[in-house]
Image (cartoon, rainbow, N blue to C red):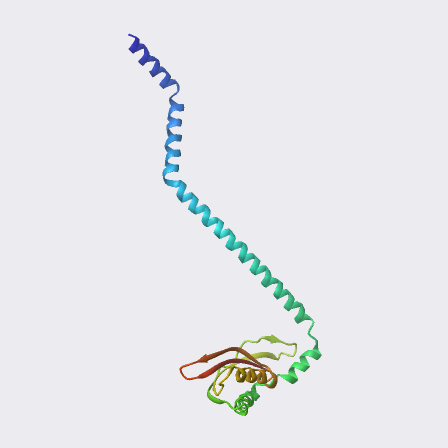
Length: 193
């Protein structure tokens, strides 16, 4: 009899607290599932989020620096006077004078006791680097020269120094040595209008 009374009390308690017992079981199942399956995945997602946040902050810093440089260039561009543009017009060769530039470059190399193995001229640029108020854009031209005859470090220094002093408006982008043919390749950029 005591067993049936006990069963009855358990049944009454079970029906009375049925919703609480089911909610407790659901919480235990969800919590256990989270601990077993989702915790590692959530940690991985959080770590990726932190790394992504750091890369975004680095990107923001980089773009802020770029913006400051562009604002500085814009301020400098605004300060260019018509007299500065007139001087630039006098210094920069016109497109029709490009062959003379190439001849001058070859003569300069030969006058320094070097041989020109090859000379490649890039296509004339269609974009403009700077545009003045007289609608005269400054354009760039790439030139690749392969030379032979530089046999020492001092010779290289002397040649580069002479090039920077004697060839106006020629920018050296790269200078590479090719041991197979014992030649040097110069990637140059010059400007014209």
